[in-house]
Amino acid sequence: MQHYVKKCTDCGSINLFVNRDKGEIVCRDCGLVIEDKMVEFGQEWREFEDGDSSGRRRTGAPMTYTQFDQGLGTEVGQKADLFQLASKDRNKFFRLRKWQYRISTAIERNLKLALAELKRVSSFLKLPKMVEEESAMIYTQAVQRGLVRGRSMESVVAGALYAACRRHEVPRTLDELSEASGIEKKEIGRTYRFVTRELGLTILPSNPADYIARFASSLKLNAETQSKAVEILEQAQKAELTSGRGPTGIAAAALYVAALMHGEKRTQREVADVAGVTEVTIRNRYKELLEKLKLDKELKKQKKKPKGR
Image 1: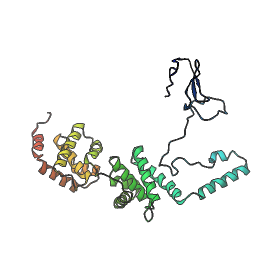
Image 2: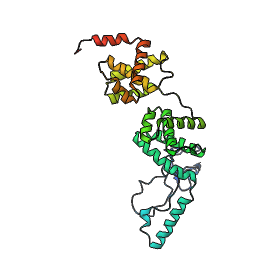
Image 3: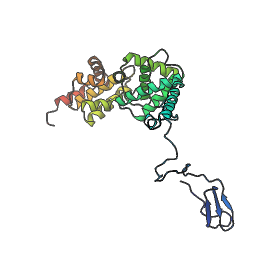
Image 4: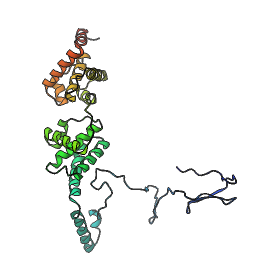
């Protein structure tokens, strides 16, 4: 919003004239030009059609890495519009469309295919827009640096998505990315490590607490159980039980212990299926938590409680 001077700085008059064509504010009494470089915030176009133009905007869509040209490119005619032309003009514009595609660079053609796949996987995993934008930027940088050569496009897309999820602390496992993209888990992890190393991306280790809400929702556990699981994880981090262990396994074990404490019994098989780990992992982490954090007493108290209380 633009604010104008309310009175003349020379004579103090409030009888001012705003000349929008010249971008000036002039005092009607003494003639002093108070402002001579006003910025015009109105529209920059002329209207050639009748109708309300209030819906027209000053600028176009914002730049985005989810399009191969960042949303700045133009296309020669839409097919629906071209069919309204005469036969001669229609053929000419179809030839122009064909040549526009042919003269595009190899990077642009790669990005067209890869970003379409990226959007598909992102939609399948229900990732937020900021993660999709970040992963598209990472993939674009990888293509420009020549990191895609010798690797499948799908694996680099999955690696970029996993890196973006880690940077924005959006909990998604390699198993989920493998299911969505159809690429093996090991291949995604290998590509992810290569891309982040070559691009110099700083990614902090995953926090097991980020997975608690998702796992608890799938297992239909209440809020008290979730809070207890987060509390157990905080104790485990202080006791240095989380270092060197998979975040999903330790998070699932903490949730399993918390569920037992609150009388919401879930089998190790159910928890393992939701977390995407094996029952052996759940069992090992569960034993470690009980031994190191001395949680046996709380579990015994829960077992001794009479039913209905």
